[in-house]
Length: 310
Ligand SMILES: Nc1ncnc2c1ncn2[C@@H]1O[C@H](COP(=O)(O)OP(=O)(O)O)[C@@H](O)[C@H]1O
Ligand SMILES: [Mg+2]
Image (tube, rainbow, N blue to C red; front, side):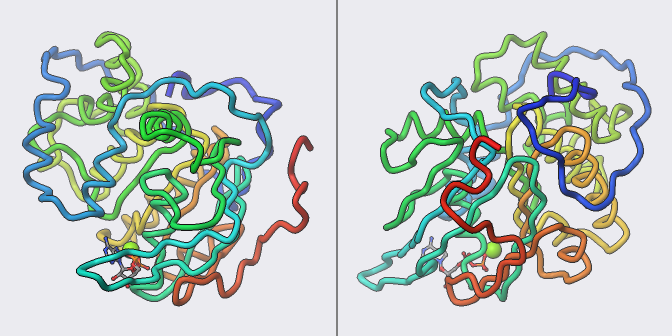
C-alpha cells in the first residue's frame, strides 16, 4: 500500500470488523537487490497446471490501469440475480442460480456454505475473474457485462485484491518480489515497486522476511505475504477464499486478526469464505450459500438506493 497509516478518507465509511489488532513494528532495513521481479511467473504457471480456477486466479496479475468512468458510491460490488452455469462435455452445471448481494465499502463479510455450494464461483464473479451467465454485476460502479476483457482486467486490478487458500506465491521468488508482482503489470517502476512491497510487508508484520522465499516461510507467513500482495495495489475490496483453510487454528486466528486490522485501519472491505463457524462469527455479516443460492444473509441491504451517496 502507498501508506501504511493513511489519513482518514471521508469517502470511506467506517470499517466493520469487530476487532482491531495492534500496529506492527517498523519496517526492517534489508536491501539486497535482485533484478528479476517476474522471473518466476512462467514457472509458477507451469506448477499450477491449467485448472480453470487456477487459470482464472492467474488473471489477477494482468495489467493494471486506472478504470475510467467509474461512479463513486458506497457500494463496492453489486450483484443482481446473478447466475453462473458451467458447461462441460455438453453437461450444464448450475453453480449459481440467482444471487443478489451488495458489498459496501469498508464492509467485513463472511460467506459460508457446504463444499460445492458455489462459494468460489461467487468469489470469482465478485472479483471479475469470471463473468456471470445471466444477471447484472457492478464492480466499482461499472457494469461488468459492458466491459471488454481488457477493461475488466483493469477494473479488477484496480479494485480487488485476492487471497487464496493455497497462497499462490511464486516458489523461487522472494517475499518482496511476490508482493511487488501486481505492480509489474501496472507498469510501476522497480524502485517504487520495491518500496511499496516493503511497506506492504511491514503492514503485515513481515519486515524481517523481505528476502525469504515461500519455502523458507511458515504457512501463516506465506498467507501474510499473499495478503500483502493483495493490498499492494490499494484495492477497495479484498476477497479471501478460505484464507485460513490450510492453517492451524492459532495461525488462522493471526491471519484473521490481520484482516480485521487492515479493515479497521485502512477501510478495505473484506469478503472471506470459510467453513469454520468461529471464523465466520468474527465477521459483521454472514452470507450463507446453499446449492447456488443465498439461503440467509445477516447484512443484506434493502432498497436499490441504500448506501448510495450517503
Ligand atoms: N470450472 C468448472 N467447470 C465445471 N464445473 C465447475 C467448475 N467450477 C466449479 N464447478 C462446479 O460448480 C459447483 C460449485 O463449485 P464451487 O464454486 O467451487 O463451490 P465451493 O467453492 O462452494 O466448494 C460445483 O458443483 C462444482 O463442481
Ligand atoms: Mg471453494
